[in-house]
Length: 243
Length: 243
DNA sequence: CGTCGGGTTGATAACTTTCAAATTTCGTGG
DNA sequence: CCACGAAATTTGAAAGTTATCAACCCGACG
Image (cartoon, rainbow over all chains, first blue to last red; front, side, top):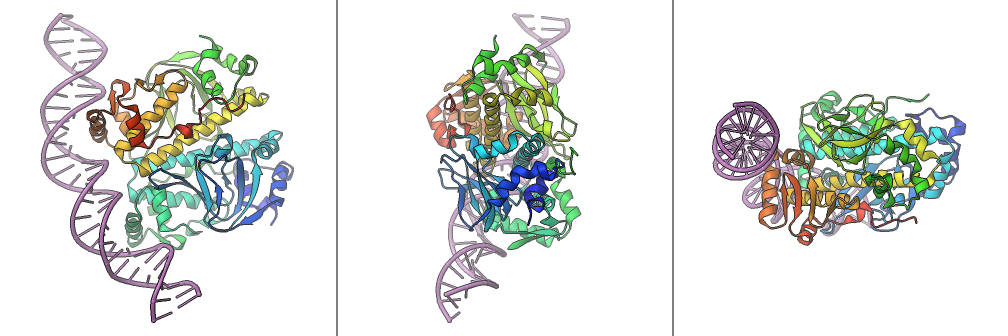
């Protein structure tokens, strides 16, 4: 597949129309892509972490471990996302990231990354938008945990993931393929595994959504949106702002 | 007061040693500073928001309103912070921000901001660090809400605020001045006003901290750090990385 | 056919919200 | 300086949500 159709290009193009020339710096990275198996760490908490990964295929999850041993998943990365962006500016990484599936990525050093974007203001703008969007996602997770109960929160989270995947052509209003297991969902949403199970059951019996191994199915998209008070606008992906 | 001693310069200097020349672009902003009264909105949710504010004095809080009317506070800004940075890249702002006290700020347009940092790689690096740090704070709020109960979460949050204020000379291990009211703390930590009140009482009677109108006092800093599993490293402020 | 990693269920305990009311604090005008 | 009203804080009791603990189920796989 060519870069132009890759998830990264699709995602960045959602904000800024980018010509082939403007995408050129990414071509170099794209040619260097390789596979990494399931269950590998890309980023390690408390290590000097100075590498980022462009994610073309597969899923990654970022998490933070506490001294008690409990894990809080702080985000999932899907095709088109960049992994470890925050860690490159810090002395030591404040989180870990590991692969949920076999992934196709390019490892990029911080200097390469900065160098490539430096003389390309449109591409740089697209990257900044992507960073701002990641932040908006964090903020929405805070709202999820602060103001929504477990059912609403779960619905909201799975809808958001759907919107992100739809942007890169991997989902639609009917659902999407999803390698997340219930215990990860629990660690992501701040509830126990048993409770998330009951929550998912509720959503299922009410005909709202079906979460099963490897697939999320929106049984009633509209009612789900209403239940979760889901408003995509924070993802700001209504087509290019700069043409 | 001169820029060099302002909270903004102090904060950025925590990451990159900046000469007077390198700080020059900020001088222009600093000369334009003005006061804004308590209770004013600086950023409005759902509006085309394209202005940022450099905050020199006073406190601001950022929040998101839901359609149900409930409010989730997503962060507090203190001297040295920049308000609304995320909203400048979005079509419409995903959050609101309003003043908690009378503040001293400079309003900066996104083009001015980008222009000033463009040819100044050290200053730009400091700004990027600041953005990454803001993100780390969001992440920690997610961990707070996902993995810590209300007591630990409150302790953690108030310790973090103390560390941030200490960086700009406004706090120490004994405490800091703080205009946050209990209902804001509740809306920030995802609990009710009544519950935060009971939590604060617990912390007080256990001799850990005293939260009272306009002041936070750490009665036993070390035990508090232990209770909250607080590890400042995610704030990455141990002195300049680049000298 | 047995094992193992998910997934599911039930009962009880812990934590947090809700609702309702009292008390304290603080600024303002008399 | 004191009284007053509004805002903020505090308290109590009951209800609701989520965690914990302890099993059990089930399908994939060797």
